Length: 397
Image (cartoon, rainbow, N blue to C red; front, top):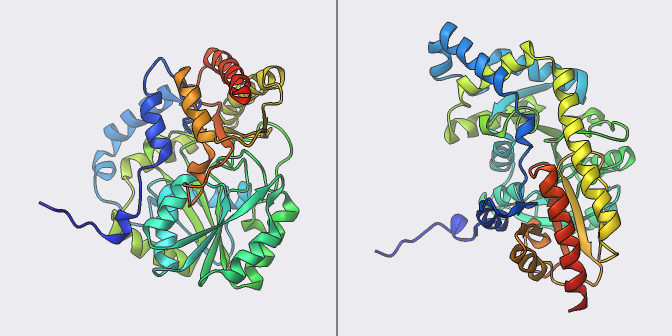
């Protein structure tokens, strides 16, 4: 039969990253295309022990339905961390546990946007967020990311010329895909612009604990005095993406509506997974665990950057992240990065072309993203050398 799909889903194409990941699933391909945390960061033995303890002592609680807002002991842990570490929980705020931070994007868009309303986003930006906004019928307008964050003049213009803008989306720490960090001054400016135009801000801080150099920068949420910022956090990089646990901290009225939206979506986040996360926070030496993760990424990032410094030969420029998982590159001859990606994959190295991180991915771009967390050090060494060698050949063609 002929299937008539909804307009919302008909306009959504498969993620370019996911399609490239299919290629990189070949064990012979070096996966610079992934966005996964290093499996070396997973506390396997701790998780095994916590799981056994939960199923031995409180199996019914773990396997039964839970409340939509989340497992209360875990919510309290998240609230405390938001207050004490991230500066992301105020007097009039509330918090909901979600099925990954990805669900925060979906719930907030459902809560704030009608069909045709606009979300103002960084450009480039996390493809999962862009897809979530668009799938909910929102128009996405992107603002260039500079070395210190969103271009404020462009941001203002985008707001003034867009149809009913509702919120600003940004990843201020080690942005995906660029790896850049928004300065404290720019964070304040973004919030001031939001106040001027009566918009909300969705602050995605999925990489909050992954700083391996430089100085900590206060969250945008920490400057919020009038209930304008929703802060999205995740356990995917700190503990495990497979557990699918995230959270949103924000104005209680907004969180209440997001809770209703979540009841329609999945009723509640898996109790068993939440209980594992709670035990992780209450029984694991977090300082040691975070130090271990930061060491892994510091060493991997340095290895990749050292080889790029030595071998790239000026064929592309690249960012130098202070944390997170990614390095962003721009071919200096303004070549089509999609074509370059195809050349690199022939050499068994997978990267992601930059157009994948834009709402309009049909535009030719000279940028691409590298991931250093997933590959081994040997893969980083071999793959980066292949990448640079291919770039030199490509620039001469």
